[in-house]
Image 1 (cartoon, rainbow, N blue to C red):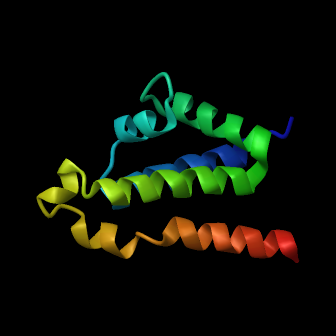
Image 2 (image 1 turned 60 degrees about the vertical axis):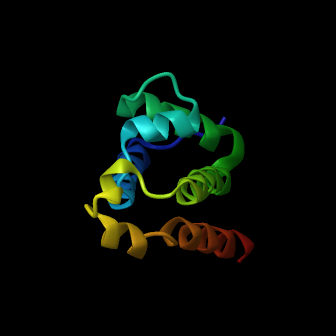
Length: 109
């Protein structure tokens, strides 16, 4: 079983918080997307860590990209619908896809 280090978990938590803020989504939105048992960050991280343990970094990135794509299909959340964070969300749409491309390039070299 592959485990994330404490530093990697901290970085993942920071990334998730930034991603949620830029997309105008909440921890509750992420809980629903991940089918986690709680909206608390430790539970969300545990769910993501489980994915990492089974599928590695590429699997984790693909899961987050899938969530991001689903959210884009659904349209803006109630936070971005009123214009709050709309520019940030638009600028951030492809960030997860770029991350996945970098991981794949790194893995193939």
